[in-house]
Length: 115
Image (cartoon, rainbow, N blue to C red; front, side):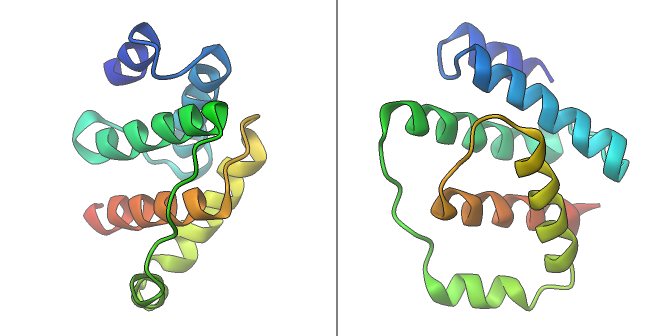
């Protein structure tokens, strides 16, 4: 995705974040047979990039509303999304907060729902 290169070019992610974004793209393709595109994952990739930036600047993100999280857990794609998130976290160097993880989980559920 060209977006990943642009995020690096414009300084949204550092080298470590850039490598992690490439790893995320690869994990989706190799482990889950999901090709990330601008259309299906552009927003998710940007969110992860800005989450890496917040990690670097030690900026906190407000937690997702508990009601939203409870509704998310009812989605049929939730278990698969949680599995993907676990694999992503194991594959990347930048470890995000639980609050960031929850937002990324929402993006993964959205992605899986579109497939």
